[in-house]
Amino acid sequence: GGVGKTTLATVLYNKISHQFPVYCRIADLSKIYRHDGPIGAQKQILLQTLGEEYLQTCNLHNASNLIQNRLCREKAIIITDNVDQIEQLEKLDVRREWLGAGSRVVIISRDEHILKEYGVDVVYKVPLLNKPDSLQFFCRKAFKLDHIMSSYDKVAFDILRYANGLPLAL
Image 1 (cartoon, helix red, strand yellow):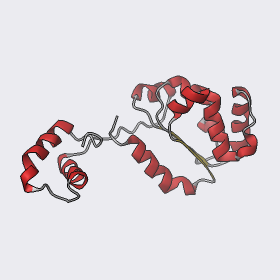
Image 2 (tube, helix red, strand yellow; image 1 turned 120 degrees about the vertical axis):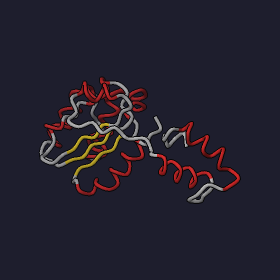
Image 3 (cartoon, rainbow, N blue to C red; image 1 turned 90 degrees about the vertical axis):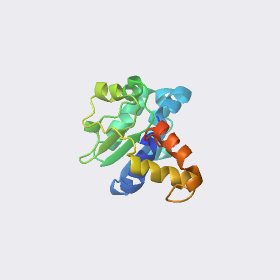
Image 4 (cartoon, rainbow, N blue to C red; image 1 turned 90 degrees about the horizontal axis):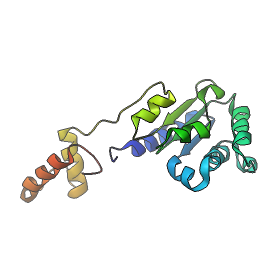
């Protein structure tokens, strides 16, 4: 946690969603799943991709059929963030093969095992910041400068060593 997965997903969505006629971003699948169950997550997809008139769906099977039938010829991007159980993906029931040519499904998770078990094609592991980037990031956040203030150099380097390239810690 804290490496920047959600930030990268948000930037990706903002940069490329306009290239897709149909787009959907579920910012916190785990939270929606906890509060509203899998039907709540499917309703998010229906709302964002097809509009409000499809929200009267009352069960998973009907929602899955609607998603499959309405999106089958559409080029779509669907991004799900904060997936923490394989069941969330299985019950969300959005399969890339149901979507039109050129579609993308992006799944953000802390647990690489979930991604592999679900059968994703490519896993991208967000790297930690290297030392120069960590220093620059820390200085911009702590001092609003691109360099360390001289009176803080020892404590700053201790913090950098402790954070070990993790942006949230910095």
